Length: 595
Image 1 (cartoon, helix red, strand yellow):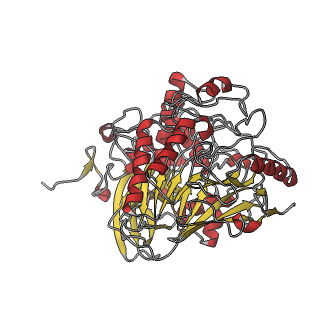
Image 2 (image 1 turned 135 degrees about the vertical axis):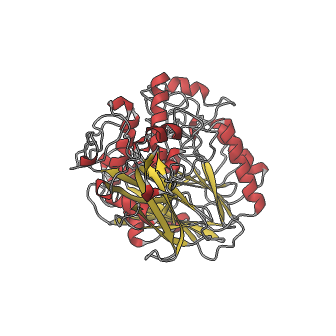
């Protein structure tokens, strides 16, 4: 009698080598935490062996790659059933069926089989790795492969197809990182983003570097989605579901809606991403025990749903299978730089401001009493120790730069009124001892060339890393600084000062510059992103403003450019920061266009 390969007892000969195990969506974020994992034994037991036919499924949300290493990269796609192939309603907006107990739907017994191949050429003839895996409703029909056997700092092309068919996904491009001991022979270029609110505008900022082919990798510092009930004035920019997100169904639908934006799809297909979450991937002003409008068991279940959906939909690795919420991780880019991606929101953050602004309203009074507590932390002590170890190890191994991806603005920012009222206690200004410990680590370890990247604020801030009140600092020369902070504005999310005209916003920026000695450039008006070109001798940062996020366009403005010379630990003054010119905001000792 001939042996037959079956799926739960029935013939599935076309997918002999496929497995659930190779689809990393089933193991993210953690198999060891039942509320987050998908038990494969249960999935396999439920399968009837029936597979979706090629005509019954489509690649509905493009392709993506991320978390590149020197020898591997994560590849992502979604193979979703069509309307006629399942007995369930579609999510509004054309997103395919998403199953969740809260919606009263049962997981499908049918599986889809997906193949991938990755090659050195666009024609996919020089194949380096390939494989097969199943996907099911249990993981929202998402697919995540780790493509291995790759060469360092090399461009690859990849594609998915329905097993044993010619139905294919769009073609994707990705790039591995240099080997850790490799001397990099060219500058490495990054695009840095945060805060993309779908109802507030089009994601032009994502598409522009892809159209220019101006970067090697993309960093996203969080707020990839927003959980709010949508209320857009733009046509077709209200994402699913039509309510605030709470359930697994909700977060999957919201992510799916965002991943229909053409420019976001283009960026994912063109570049390897290294993402991390902020607060809105769960809910506004999240901390370890709640958000602005959820706490207790409601918050716990909400966070579990959000984290699981995020890992299903994003091309990232789970850093530690024993740690259900660990998204903080590191990457080495040859001897040029080390990148640490922090989680200053969800992991173990102490109480933050819930409502109110500028120290007034909500629970601001309670937070104000805690800001000086020595045991107060923005990231949790486990992550803190890891971060300090990363900084020291990077310096000791001789990497030229230490780049830190972080959510909230690190530098002290005061409004300069009512006794130096802080701009926002929801930033590092609400966790003073934790910030002091970072500076102490840099000082005691004699760690140079540290660049902090920040998002969240929906505004741009470029500062010297100055330990004010603890170490002498000269705002004109930058002497005494420990490094530089580059904080970018939002992709689309509204400015802290709303629709204030440019000339008025610039006046507010000028006030902020005058009240904060370390702050060298600030802009409240533009949405956009920034690019970094990292070399051994210097880092060049270019900030781009999107002319109008209310319409799809590739128009953008170079707002300001900055240089960080190796060994100087400050923004370059030659003779003035940023060359003394900017197109918006306020530049210390420089000129800014009025209109």
